[in-house]
Every structure is written in structure tokens, then in C-alpha cells.
Image 1 (tube, rainbow, N blue to C red):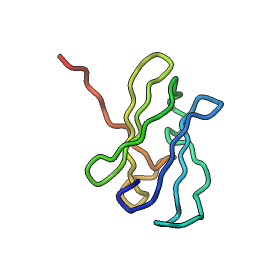
Image 2: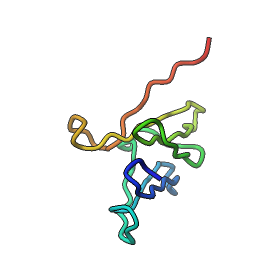
Image 3: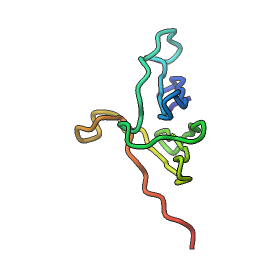
Image 4: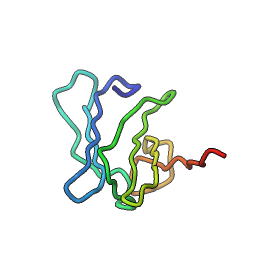
Length: 95
């Protein structure tokens, strides 16, 4: 469940990319069209995981090379013009 009360889903598509959909409003039976979340920049080798993080939600997955990826949802009004509503969160390995 996203902070706005809508149910959100993320899946690994047959093409190896991560797609998401969600309710148009809390409790609605209307869903958004499926949309790829990385701008087709990163394939995933595993099913993605969705999680809440403070006031937003994130998608986590691993690339076929084994690199972990974390993408944070950022609504259109809060971001520059990009091809996706998700921005990559830089990950640094533990020392």
C-alpha cells in the first residue's frame, strides 16, 4: 500500500524489465495502465520487491549481472522531465 492509500504492484515482465500498476485512487476498482519503471535502462533477474520508505515507496531488484537496484517513486510534480516516475537511489557497498 502506498502512502496515498492506493494498492501498487510491481512485476518482472517477460522481457526482463520491471513494470508497475496501481489503483487510480484509494478503494478504486480502476487501475493505471502498466508502465516500465526504469525507462528501459535496467533489466531484472528476479521478481521486484515493493516497500514503503518514509513518505514514498521503493522498488528493489537485482540486474542479471547481480547488481542491486533501488528506485524511489517520485511524482511528476516533484521531478524534472524524465521518462519514468522513479529515480534511482545510489547504493554504496558496506565497508
